[in-house]
Image 1 (cartoon, rainbow, N blue to C red):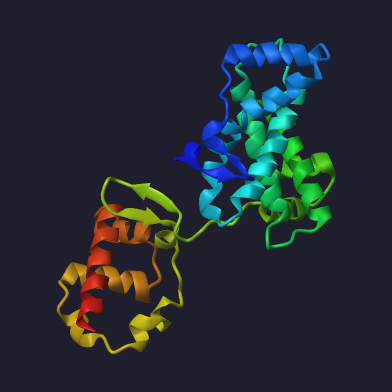
Image 2 (image 1 turned 90 degrees about the vertical axis):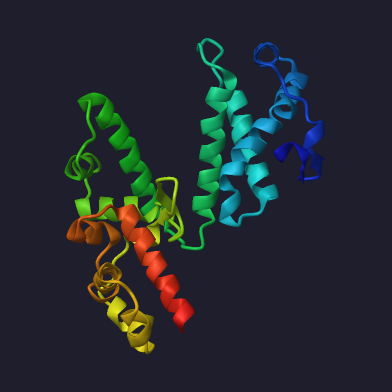
Amino acid sequence: MYNKVEICGVNTSTLKVLTEKEKIDLLKKMHNGDKTAKDELVTGNLRLVLSVIQRFTQRGENLDDLFQVGCIGLIKAIQNFDLTLNVRFSTYAVPMIIGEIRRYLRDNNSIRISRSMRDIAYKAMQVKERLTNEKGRDPTIEEIADEIDLPKEDVVLALESIVEPVSLYEPVYSDGGDTIYVMDQVGDNNDDKNWLDEIALKEAIRNLNDREKRILYLRFFKGMTQIEVSSEIGISQAQVSRLEKGALDHIKKQI
């Protein structure tokens, strides 16, 4: 569908799509001083930018803004692409575009992170990458903290501060039936004080079978996650999810 939309005042269905050979030829011309080649490369790869921003359409961000930020990533990819590498231009450009968009989303997050905190996080990530290459394994937090001469608590806090928030409705598993979401993995010791405890549901719950009653008891009164419940009663997590949903739907109909 993305080839039929208008974004930033551009009708994307009219955009030219360059072949790989055309991209390489234009890159060579640009490196030889042809000033028009860069413009042709940008125009000929706008569809690539558009395809990348489709991954971020569910975040509620303005697509025009994301498209413009993606174009910045594209331009950086064009400027930094090494013609001696045996790699397709799109293979190199896509991570650059994604990185630029993620940086924009992180810097414009409603949860403001201090510059010093971000600097620590970026240093920690650089050190982690270097140590991983040197040691052939992921370094520990202690090793990273020693390298940048900071307490490990500060490193952990900085790294966690730049992690993008995850929606409770983010799908984490699907077996072809009911999808399990992040919220299904979260237990809460205060669940016994929520709506199951506040609304008179005794009559509706009485009509459930024993297994459904036990699942609701463990989930909402004991605050267990679906994984913990599945282990407790000996069925799969997907089955727990289906039974829980069915029981709640039954209760809602009764009240």
